[in-house]
Image 1 (cartoon, rainbow, N blue to C red):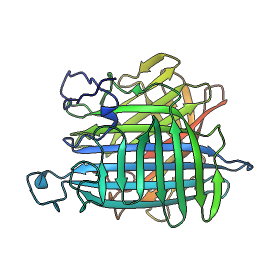
Image 2 (spheres, one colour):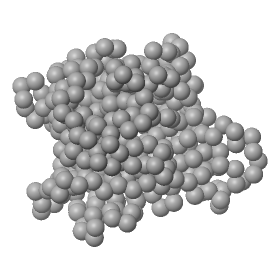
Image 3 (cartoon, rainbow, N blue to C red):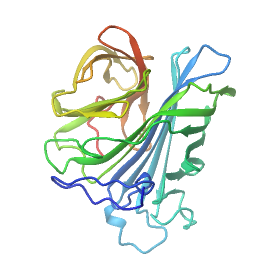
Image 4 (cartoon, rainbow, N blue to C red):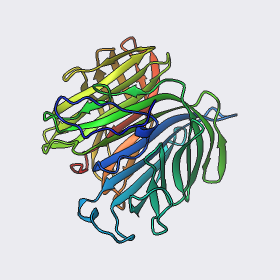
Length: 350
């Protein structure tokens, strides 16, 4: 598609996204993230692993007029994790650095950069970028390493109204949001010195979202699922919660083949069935949900209860994000993906 720039969300506005431009960064927007999750089948093993990599960009309004090359006009955060299903353990790490907002690698003072022409974000030696149509993720931590390539097998999925996703009762609470489900994942994980080569049936999911204002003042957090269904369909569902735990807003989508159904408010209903309490944060998370959508009633179950991540030294949030399996209303295992839950330890702030 032709390159172009999107305008800030407004009531009744469309969202004419243009690629590859809108796969890149949007520095005029306050908040942005690129989010990849996946399921890794490992060669010569029956064990399975989940992996997650997220880059966040946060615009700092007070520094935008500063001329100094040292001015931190943006902060870039990154979180990464691996779930070992057999060992029932999560490993995770985090990074944070300043970025001037200049073109990639042009400011030697920058420890992080983002590209505005296509997917390209780096924080020191952690990178996510597109080369010859393939997304490449590279990072090295003390306990694990990711060297993964992601090949699209389906077209871009525009969430909401052609990519403009409502997140609250007021029109300003919107985000630009698209997904790439059913990415073919290739490459290698390394976990505590053990090399794990991915099999060809390993899959991943990309979300890219950016906004000026996303959360209503009374929202404390959200519950979200992104699921690659085994028949090639893609399921997204989310709810924003208030301080009473009630749904302030909800949404999502279901795509099967070339048919996309976008959920209207009230059509995605989350009902917790089982909880797990973190001994570290004392937060209580639902690790099993019944999620009612127009596509079906789904049972969403965490594959490991303890997939809580503490990002106190970067974004400041403690949240749950991890690998899950999904059953349909006929009690058939129909897909795998990721479940994210925020605002259970403390209200989330973007």
